[in-house]
Length: 260
Ligand code: F6R
Image (tube, rainbow, N blue to C red; front, side, top):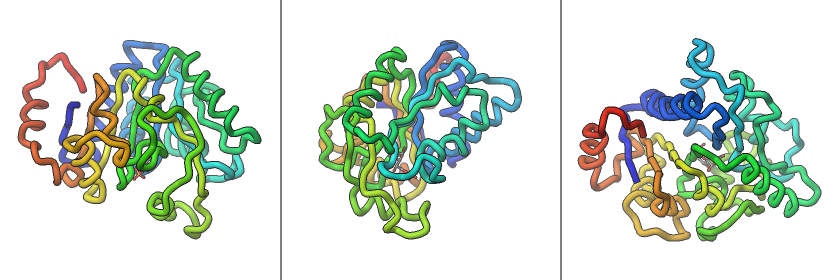
């Protein structure tokens, strides 16, 4: 796993946007996996800026969201589909029909999970999957003790995750109890995983993800099994890493032609 320690969330956004720009430029029909939440916001802001400058187009890119709440009406502003439109896809040139998410309003949720898996497979698979991380080490909504081989399915959110996400709702009780999420097995099939984290609240989860033993109690440790996983953090999220000097020197001494 490569660890890139950046000075601040803006620099984090620039480094990850470089990798996405390179992908979308070199692979015109690229498939990009998106995450919602606060962590990737500087990445989206930088990509929007580059798009507005005419430097990057997403017209031929297909996008897949990681997850979606179950039971919120489709036009609720906090559905992940609406959130990603507002924060990213409505501000670039990707056609709305090319940006997909699991449907948390489906009457048959099991069939919806299967349909979503098939849609990802039919696209040729995800080239680069952006990931955030929960304070408990979740990725997507794969909460602790999720199977490391899991596929897209319905998960019950932990009280901690509902509490973390309560800031987006008018009251904590409004946060849905369930979500549809790509499984860890699904996520590990993406060709490049890029996990981003900033802020001190993520420091413990990042240290366990990078340096801890692999286990279902910290779902993000599954990234250690992936041949091309990159963890991009700011100084605060990196604060509990024991081998931080090594990560810094490895990144600085990378061959010039290699991005993350
Ligand atoms: C959302 C997702 C979640 C978030 C995680 C961190 O699509 O995949 O795993 O990335 O809950 O959220 P923030 O970045 O808001 O702390």
